[in-house]
Length: 111
Length: 113
Image (cartoon, rainbow over the protein chains, first blue to last red):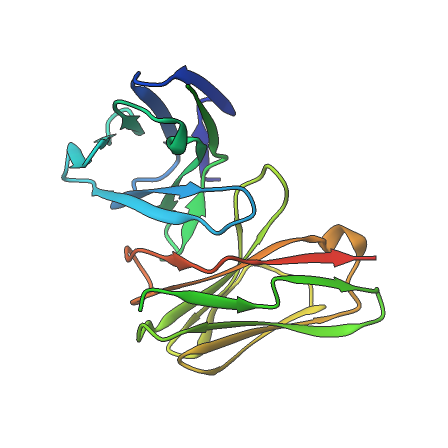
């Protein structure tokens, strides 16, 4: 069955540093992968989508990479701020044309 | 307008009650979704509607009954729920099934006593 794993349940970093989150998947070759941010008690908010033929995508302080050989996506937040503290979810289509979410990484940025 | 609205925000119900959750979007999206999310877990897909027809049912118990009356509205009817059904229920929409971005509502926090 399809497994989507995010490397750590929680990540604590100092303000100004770069946060790097990992998403690994097995048993499928998705055409794209998405990243969402979720704050406590709220719905996820879309951040970035990267397609299988794209190696990297950027949006302001966010950068996503997609390595289909390693079956891995990396999500970077540069110059992190306390306001970046949230849970970050990767998601991909496991063949049903609907998203399956990874387990999430809870990022805490310390001032 | 990129908003998905959900009502109510909070719902407490007994195991014998019947209640409904409502979701609305006015973005012209043709795919709508129900997810269930337990604490510290990712959203789990329950149902997907595409062009007002049920496209995916993730083997959800029949005590959850979805309905899509029109392209803007999605309901989830609840009956004879169990305490373990307590969770955050999220609605989402997208232009169509597939790679489109999903827009999520704020969710309904459901507690079953």
